[in-house]
Structures are given as structure tokens and as C-alpha cells.
Image (cartoon, rainbow over all chains, first blue to last red; front, side):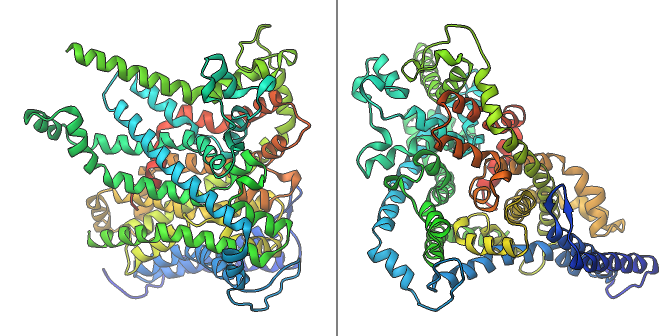
Length: 358
Length: 274
């Protein structure tokens, strides 16, 4: 590949035209507003103008006969966006969490780790949140893994109608946590006596009265455990799909060989298949775990800010935007981030290492 | 052989029992939705409609949510199209134009997929207010596109990694540039992963709640925020609420029913290693 710079007049004209167009757009939008159908588009216009200008620069970069430069230059806008909106904003949140900002006007007075020590040592509500998150995470992961694996093994028997069953187990995944929370909070209606309804009514009709439950109104911490039901309904099918993918990638010869050696079906699952499914379990635990550590909308839809079902995500929302305790809200957000990072970062680093070896 | 048949019967019974439980919420929603207003009673929640099928509840539910369904649609369509385009370019560059540190760059981008958005919420709100995109849909679209970069990049990168290097080498020898390889070889092969990403982003943005509730004002609420508000208010009967919930879930459900295999591929791409 020849290196260096190759001047091409046609492209140079194009580049200059793009840059001039972008600059003009910036200049005009800097002086006036852009409103389309009643919505404010000025900043979007500025962004697009900037991108047009940048396209001109890209055309010039393309004239250098080095495609690594071009590749980097093309990636740059996304990298900058992620750098600002993910890493920049995390840094900014950390800074807010080290201040005493309360009220609408920003106050960046440095108070060190005071917000964190308040939350972790003295804050009763945050204690409830941590416990609820723990209950939810354990119940959710176990529920999804056990039900997902059971369904995957059932579907792996190559019965007729497999596709239909798979579709039924997976469809809840496409519904929002809000919609599923709204429906399930009606199904899990804790009313008793004459007003009995929902699943409790179903239990009564089936003469399974001993199953009638107060659901998420059960005294804590067990009430929180019932909020897991809609979440498991939505994601056990996903876990099933992961396991089914794992099961189907195990060659049939392996099972045959074990059968020839006299192993029972149960032994085949116990000693051959389960160990081979361990990587799938790890992936599932990480995906499900990070979802449950930041669970928010489902609990909002079920509990409507009921303090007994509080989780850090809701606490952060209410304390920041209803209570204007920005510093405390930021500290909760950062603690949530730390809990997710402990789970996810080793996984990302491991993946990056194994990729690098390829 | 007889043992196998008995076992299969058991498996079928287990599968059918599980399927009944999985379909219960939808059954309840549809059942409630088609009953006439006079027949609505929490005590007879599970009874079949005695006076024939009605759609009054769905009309009432639609009246409640119509502006919000429209808002969601206006937000989701540009979001899904633009973020898939961005993801395609990023994925191509990171899969086929590796530079020193490209794995690190990819991992750093990927981390953005896992963060709890509460940890960036305060700066985000302040920033959106500063650039005057707070409260309206264009701002929400922009936010969804930016926080969608990790997952769209991941799906496209994994897909493009599967395109053989021989094809690309051949094109390079014929003198195709970086842009030429994308335009004449990679892009025409991308239709399946575009379908995956567009469907994935459509579903995600349609179902998303946190950004929607924080970044939009009441007249621009997407459907999830409006539905949650409806459920929390005492003004709406639960039968109308169930019909409204079904309407709010319908677009993603239909996408799933008709394009489910693409949906599943998006899921798997998000789950398996990057």
C-alpha cells in the first residue's frame, strides 16, 4: 500500500464545499432558532452542521493514503459521544456526589465522601433498598436459571410443536416492564374475602386455598420476593433460549457415546451436559444480574413508589427530582454503577483478553 | 419404547402447563378487554364474556393513550433508523479495520451498555436543558441514539466479523478503498443485521421508561410514561386500563410475532461474548 498524500482537485472542491456549508449552517443557527413542527431543533441543526463540516475534513483525511487514519476519523464522532455521555457524565456525577448540592441552584462545595457515608451508615431507606435489591437479585437470577434450564431441557427433547412452545415462552420479553408490571399488579391483587380477585380467585376456584397469598403486600422482606414473578415471566424465556442454544451446540455423538457406555439419561445430563453449559450460566448470570441491580421501571409499575418495595433506582429518582437533593441522588447513582461494574468489568476484560489472543 | 412414550406424554404435560402460565396475563387482558362495561367485576375476572364480544374498552383505552402512542412512534422510527446506520459504520470499522487499541476502544464503548442510567442522569438533564433539547422528542431521540451506540456497534461488529476476509482481500486487490469495500461488499450483505438492529432498537426505545419520564414533559410523554400514569390514577377503570396496556404492548408484540427470529438474534448478540 502506497503511503503519503495524494492531492485530488475534485475531492478538494467537495471537501471545501462541505466545510463551507457546515460552517454557514453553524453561523446561521448561532444567530437564529430552528423550529420544526413546534419542536426546538436548533441544537440538532448545530449538530448536523458540525457533522457536515466534519464530513469535509473526512474527505481530506481520505486523500492521505493511510486508511487507519480514515478509520479512526470515522469512528471519532461515536467515540466522542460515548466519551462525553458515558464517561464524562459519570465523572460529573461523581463530582456532584462529593458536593452538598441541595436545591435547584448547583452548589459544588466539596464535602468529600459525606454523602456516601450518610447513605451507607445512617440512611434507613437506603438500607431497605439494598436489602430489597439483594432479595430481588437472588430470586430473579435463581428463578430465571431454574425455569429457563427446565424449559430448555423440555424443548431439547425434539418434540413436535417445539417452535410454538418456544414462541410462547419468549414473547413476554418483547413487552415493556411497565406494561408487565401493570398487568401483574392486577393479577397479584392482595385483596381477601369478598373482594378476592386475580390469581387468588383462580386458586380459590381450583380449591387451592392454601396458595392464596398477599403477594407483594406480604411483610418484608418476603413481599419484595413476589415482585420477582413478573420479571421471571419476562426473562426466563430468554434464559431458556440461551440454554437451548448451548444444548444444541453439544454434538449428539457425545451423548451417544455415553449411552453406549451405559450412562442413564439423568447421568448424561448430570455429568456431561451440565458441565458443558457452565459458560452459558455465567453469561446468563451477568446479563440477568446487571438487569436486576438496576431494576427500576418494573418496581415503579408494581409499587407506585411504595416505600416497602423501594429500590435504589427509585430512591435516586425521587430524591433528585422530587426532593432536589442532587448530591445524594448522584451518590446513589454512583453506588449503583459500582455494583454493576463489579459484576460486568471482569467479564468485559476477560472477553477483551480472549479476543486479543485470536 | 413404551417408556419413551410415557416420558413424552409427561414432557408435553409439563410444556402445556408452563405455556398456560405464560399466557395467563395475556388471556386476562384480552378477556377483560372484550367484555361489555356492565359485565366488568373483579369477582368475575376469569369468567367468559356472557353477552358477546365488545370493543368498548379498547376504544376507551385508545382515547386515553392516542397522543402518547403517536409520540412513541414519532420517537422510535427515526431513532431505530439512525442508530442502525451509526452502528453499521462503527461495527464495520471495529471488525475489519483493526488498529492498535481497537479492542480497548470497543470494550470501553461496550461498557456504556451496562451502566445504570441513574449514574449519568443528573448531568444528562442539565446538559439537555443547556442545549434546549429538554422536554421534547428530538432530545429523547438523540439520547436513545447515543446510548444505543454500544449495542448497535456490538451486533454489527459480531455480524461483520463473520464475513470472510478473503472476500475483502480480493476487493482490496482490485483497488477498493475503505469506503468502497463498505459500499460494494459489506453494506449489500448487511440486510439481516439491519433487520436485527432496527427491530431491537425499536423494541428498546418503545419499552424504555427512565429517559422518557425524566426528559419529556407531559404533552410529549411516550406511551410507557402515560401508561404508568394511567395505572397510578384512580380515574380509570381497570378494564379500560387492561385494554390500554394491551394497546401499549401491541406494537412490540406484533413485531415479535411476525419478525421474532430477528428479535431472537438481537437478543443473542446482546448476550453472547463481544
